[in-house]
Image 1 (cartoon, rainbow, N blue to C red):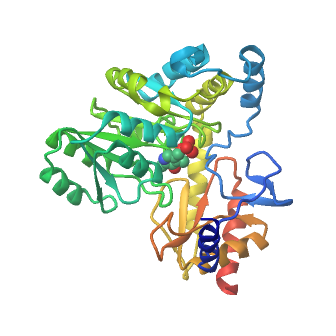
Image 2: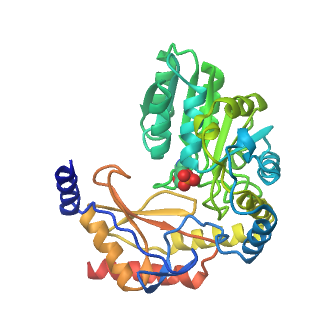
Length: 385
Ligand SMILES: *Cc1c(COP(=O)(O)O)cnc(C)c1O
């Protein structure tokens, strides 16, 4: 086995697919120290710049003081602290759904929810570009797993029409993590009504950023229905770690009993929940941050003048620059790095073959000057590469 592992790694390297971890020696922020070098970073999902926010640091220090560092047991034994409970209630209220449940990570939430709500005889309908953990959740559930072309409402309707499954669930990213575009959730909800299906929305990249006060994609699109179950992560715009699922009370009650990644796992430390409670308040009062962020996004889109590579159609923090080849994308990323700017090259299998890209991620922590530096470096790269 070891020899075949080495062979597979060598092959990845030859194909320009070997991934490397950068060693970070600073907090996650717009200016970071990685591999002992200072960089301007357009890499993180910390869209509001909260990961190193002084109020959150103070909040965590205080909460560690009065709740300790560990949860000690699963929620159903003795691990369910008041900080966890308060945060769940706060999150439900914030997103305007009856109840919410915390998970340690978004990955565990998706696997847990799909595995609990669906089984043999049921069917999941998933966008081809969904995040990997929705696929894993689908396989894990044992339900029939149908994938449809990216945001193709007609293709989805045809699948739903042909399905005789007992329970049907449409599971999609709200904002696609490598494309930045928003799913046609209103159309999906109409299909749910028509075909008695439910809608599972993974809002990892919309929560905190979209919506009237950062409530996320559902609020942004003004969608409300008992057919909706939403998931959002708390390690991206919320700046900390974890995830929550929100929906009808009966859904949450059922998940508490049956979602295995919830039942058989130790919850994140209570201090993390206390910190997140502060983070949710900052998000709710973060209109100034969001205005600044959307101004930077618009500035970047309006001022990028690039012929070699195509900026994909996105209104969100995720601004992918489509390059095509793996080595080419890598070369562009490496060129920017020589300019002191970090932007990750995203390659297959994360994105489809031949669509390697730079995933530029803009944060409210950036200044207009940071964005101007990025634009100048891309324009320079176009002449050099
Ligand atoms: C990041 C991400 C997840 C996983 O969330 P974690 O909390 O990082 O495990 C799930 N879905 C989408 C769309 C994501 O981008």
